[in-house]
Every structure is written in C-alpha cells, then in structure tokens.
Length: 243
Image (cartoon, rainbow, N blue to C red; front, side, top):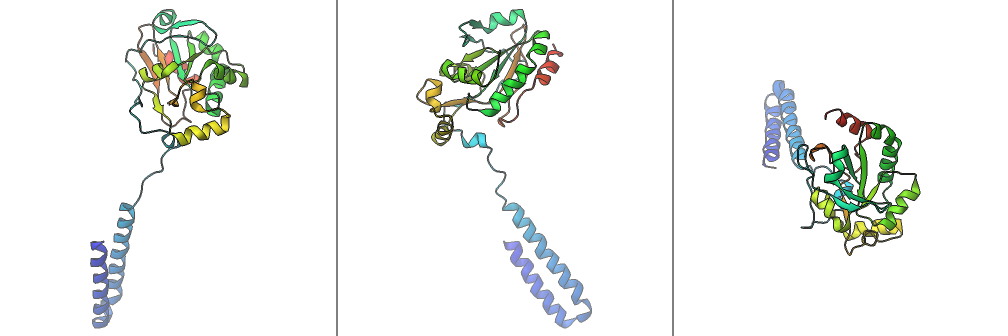
C-alpha cells in the first residue's frame, strides 16, 4: 500500500511537470501511470488466497486418529492377518511366499469411483494373474456392505473388512471423517457411514495401492489424496517387470 501511495504522488508530480514542460509531459505521465499499474498488479498477486481445498480434505476431520503419509517403496510391508469376506484366512507374510500381492484400499459400496476402479482391475485380472499377481481389496465397511459392492458388478477380487481400521493405520492411509461428510454419504447411501463400518465413528482410507514382493517389501506404492487418481492394471503390470 505504501508503494501505491508513492506512485500516486509521483503521478501528481508528473502532472505538475506537464504544466511546466509541455514537451516532456506525455512520456513522464506514461511512465508514472505504468508504475502505478505495476504496483497494483504486485499488490493483487500478494493478495491471492491460494487454491481451493480438494473435496477429500473437506471430508477430513482434524483428528489425532488420522494416520496419513503412506508407505514408500522399499519399506517392509506390515503384516495383514484377516479373514476375507468369503471366509478364507489371509496372512500376508505367508501369501507372499507364493508370489507378489497387491492390496488396494477402497472407501465403500457408495463410492462410484471405487466401484469403477475395482471393475477396471477385474477386467484385467486374468492378465494380472498370468503375471503372478494376486489382488486383495481392503475396506473399512463390513461384509454386509461389501456384498453391496459385489452386487453392482461381478468382482472376483477377494475383499477384506478392516475391522477398527487397523490395516489402514498400519499402511498410513486412515483419516477420520467429519460429521457433515458422514451425513452427506449417509443421505446418499441410505445408511450411516459409521454404521456401514460397524463402529461409532466413521473413517476412510486414502485409496492407495501397495504391491508386496516375496521378500515382504513394498516394490510399488500409489498414494494420492486426490481420490480420482488410482493405480491402474497397466501400472501394476509395469511394476511387476521391476522385480
């Protein structure tokens, strides 16, 4: 603001010069006007409020329960001991001995992008299996609501209910959901988000994908807070070529 005032004073001064020296007035007035314009542009740039908050962050509560940041390639994958929605036992440390495993985190049956993502992976499942990869979908929703995801399309990928979001926490993809966002999903899905997860509070995962090799280490990681960006089958096939 101080610079603007100085520039305005300069402009007034050039007006005085104009009255005294007609021959040079036009150029001096132009210079002073340009100076004011430059300062105004600078002030406008400094006054910018920055980019808007992505939708994901609008639904994220400020909570100590949030476990975010993801895991990196080369890290030892936390073990997963669970039961699939089909009632089969799953132990990651044992399963990887037979070949690489991909764990895909998805948000719930109400998430159209999640369903499309799983459909796309299902469409390439034969190719992924041929490459020796087995894919598991991890979700906070209970088996009852996993069944709703399966109803929407024919998905042969095994599902695992992450009870009390322990797996999500271990893989650093957990965030607590705001009440407003939970209500928004509940109104759309005809069931409360917390209820669909079998708990009192609602939590969601960043829809990350991790691929784990026989050594138990992560050799591919896709972690993006923009939930529209997902790991594709092509990404996974390319990653398999690196091991």
